[in-house]
Image (cartoon, rainbow, N blue to C red; front, side, top):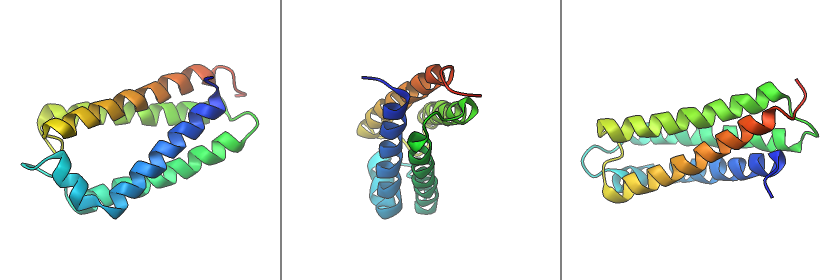
Length: 128
């Protein structure tokens, strides 16, 4: 069942797992996503660290009885930004150019976009 808490927890899990992967294996991930124009390792590590911190923030929000609607919208906007950034990287042929990389990036963007939509809809049910 989709609830705000479950959505926040799923989003947190996704952020933390992908974030840790980016921090631990940046070169492997960069080369898998694009053999022709891989992202710099440091960029992936920084994105990974931000994802882990965001995941921790999502866990904290999920632990609240009723998270503030602006906080929930903040997470949704972050998710929508991820979707736009993914589309931009693919469209520009930067950092995500391999067939497998494009497919995975689009699948991740689809899931992240769904988190954003659900969080935005649930934000109407939280305290302001």
